[in-house]
Length: 286
Image (cartoon, rainbow, N blue to C red; front, side, top):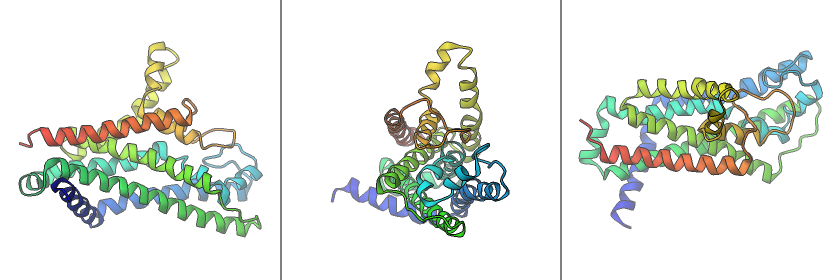
């Protein structure tokens, strides 16, 4: 085993331990699971039971709402909030994971006494991506469990999603949340701190991209730019999972195809990861 591989493996293990013992880490992940259940199932089930429109399926008939609450619909439903709300939360996680090391001075210690800078930073990024995959799998399993309970309580046939739909849903969720996590990481490296990085990231996700898409119809050149934004790729990938017509969840779009969205997200993942490693490997930490 080469020195680089050994250092990278040690860094991944060390970062996994650090993240696992960090309260903010569990707060962010727990918040997303709670929001996912609240908006995807609680509000919509209450809307179905009361005969009113749901929070995420406004104006849909009761039978359509119920169709979104059964296990077969989980791959579609659990990805709808990821492009904006879930993305904002994991962006915070990425910004905190990288930026906090500057405030605490731990990056200086790691870079002077530990493995190479490239191995140390790459280890953190790989750990974050592993966390994202685990989060998506947990959310999927929890949603399957909740949807099964709802289907049983409403005397509906319990039909699980097909293997293809489940894999596409998990891949979609991992691509979306992974991209936003690495976006937070690179902002944390640029800002050299968590507070500014979190603020800048949230403004971009929740405000800037929506404003640009809003004025795209007025200024033609801006429209072409909006097609290449990270939020457009994430929203379009989530939109490709939709099977029901009607108002979409905020952040869910139908601008790009699934293939185009995956390609653009892959480009952003490589750019954000490469940018983070390059910045922290080359720039002084004084």
